[in-house]
Image 1 (cartoon, rainbow, N blue to C red):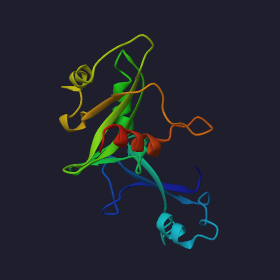
Image 2: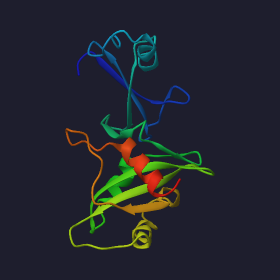
Image 3: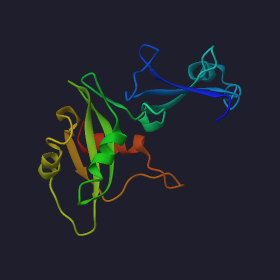
Image 4: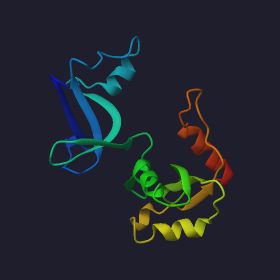
Amino acid sequence: MPHTEAQIVNVKTGTLVELNTPGELWIRGYCVMLGYWGEPQKTEETIGQDKWYKTGDIAVMDKQGFCKIVGRSKDMIIRGGENIYPAELEDFFHTHPQVQEVQVVGVKDYRMGEEICACIRLKKGEKTTEEEIKAFCKGKISHFKIPRYVVFVTNFPLTVSGKIQKFKLREQMEQHLNL
């Protein structure tokens, strides 16, 4: 957009990330709101003194300057210090011939902080096992990104507009897995 700046930032250090490295997308310009009405603390958390708006989107920029949103910072899973982006894993699982739909969430874990839980809805008439799904991952994605838990579901918790409620799904999985 004209008269708008964008940068991708390492949230921990506040510095720009290298090309092809995920970070939080920040924007600044005339299109950015001045703040949240009557909520100065929320405004301060979201919009810095320098007027950069922290979108909460995790993005990657390539060498041509194209930016791709790869997830949300609130959805990011931190497993043993490694940042794992659910959207990346969901894209991967959609390549499995038996998978209709998948949502990846982080569930609490005493030792690792969080563990990966893949909630998979299979195509009609298809059957597979947790072990077969994990075997499908081996050699195709990093070993630390292979989900510890694979749960087969028939539906996902939705808002009235049909958007998946990941926070409710996370709660359901923690309850289902007795965590």
